[in-house]
Image (cartoon, rainbow, N blue to C red; front, top):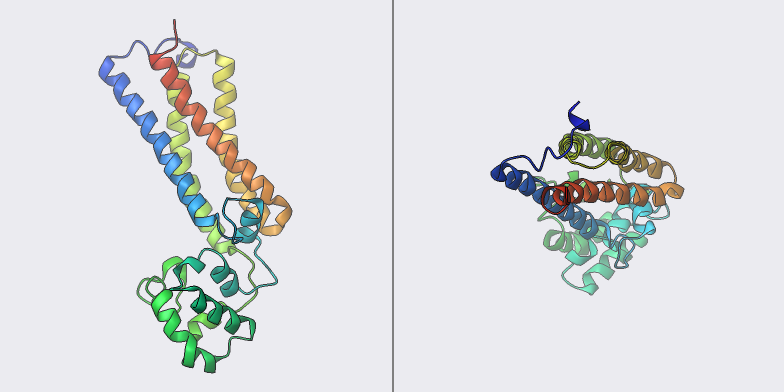
Length: 241
């Protein structure tokens, strides 16, 4: 059977080996860019640099002593205020009850300048609109992290995008000259990592206890991509017969 045969990658024409190598390298770069995007999006959720367990907990379980709006302006949205004074004005407004009168007199102009470019009725980035008080009022409820619908939507996209890619990488690995046991273990671990990476999102929504497992799932997926990229490249160009 094909996965028991050895040196299949080495016997390919040089142009085919180059194309496979480019596929592997670009896949690795794509994963690194994806990880960088995740880091840049979530590393300041707890207002401290560096991606931490607390960042993950706040993202999925939420800060249930805060409103959704307060969590946003204290986290990733804080950087978009024109200055610290505007942030403080909005923060005080939220803490004091977020009245509509103060919105009309002070807050709306700040949101127009700092928020509504991305969160207008037309763009509605992440499904959020901040043009009117009635829009913002929806964000003045308890912050419970990502909604179930959002997690389901992201999981759906993530699984459909990652699974075919992992399958192709495992297929390339199956044609390498490594022992069958190693290829089987890495392949099974790869698909298990996809399950862990997504599955722990749902658990972290139920309890902050599982936030650490989200990190473990992400690290497992990172290790998966590392192995599935590096091992075939090593077999193609470096490993001795």
